[in-house]
Image (cartoon, rainbow, N blue to C red; front, top):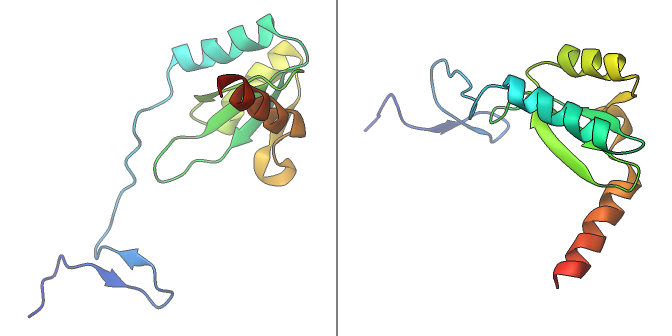
Length: 117
């Protein structure tokens, strides 16, 4: 018995639904997201932006990482948006797929985990 909406596996073993599927984002980037990144950058030293690519689940995001490793992530809609913000603030912006995250971000996360324990 065959159901046309039944899931199937392609030749690489990935599960897919037959027919066109449109990605649905959990929500679009807003001005508040961009303003939060700007406020973070203005209130901390040594901020750098890292652009994360769009996925099936979320829109393009940017992570702002301060000198001490503190960070925040927000939706930006498109890489060009955060590049303009970074240019206006005279801050560097990197593609996380090319550079990875800075080690200070991981160190900050570890410090926070130890403090919470």
